[in-house]
Image (cartoon, rainbow over all chains, first blue to last red; front, side):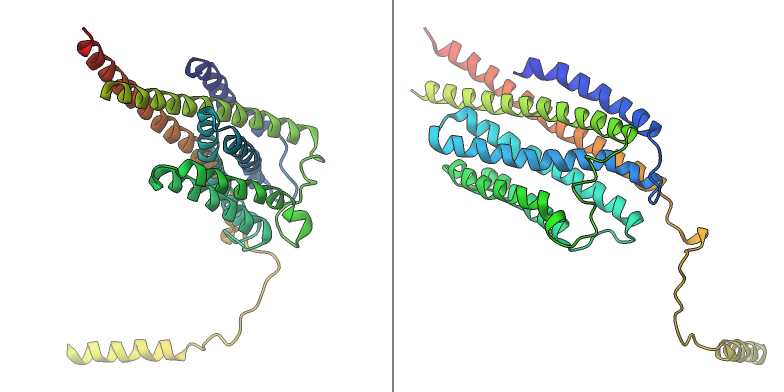
Length: 218
Length: 84
């Protein structure tokens, strides 16, 4: 698993290095100008944060039923990556908002719910870190709550009044905007898969280490 | 000398007191260019943060992996010594 992660990391690295060139070729947006280019580094981690939260929830549910350690490692890795990508979305968003809206943050439905979902996954990690034995079961339950918030976060801009761009923005993007966005998205996605593999291999090795410790005691 | 200083101080205060206080704030529809926030530092900060976050996370993973591998090797060596 670890060996397979390195080619993916290399491809993702190349995509990230070349993404600014592709983004620079995309035209400026009419009302926001240059600052709109943050969108290409904001939307992909935000979307992957939601997908990762859903993935973590599904894998956690499977772990609760089947009790396979590999499912738990996957859920743990997905939760960490949800927090990482969420942090990216929640730092790049206010940098864009400061120029576009004149404020760093507003307590509207999208931003508030995103922050709450992110905090659920931060609490997942804290529970895993300091919860002791059996915390993986409790954390799996918490991941289900985190997953349940994801559809609300996505649809919040369409349901409630908000100044955040609507979900209709992405499907209606002009070709050069869409090309830059999906190019950047591919980089974030490959990086996600590669980091997931690396994180899982750490857990796999730790499990092997624990087994060896037990064997050595016997 | 003291008299000169005192006179200057009084004159300065008189000049300050002579200025009328702002009685109201008036909004403008277009912000002057000198007051506008530049976009480039915000864009650079956003891209730099993403890069740094990936590098930091990758570095932490690398260290964790190295630590576990080191522990595994140490334990394997201990187990090999124990075996007859």
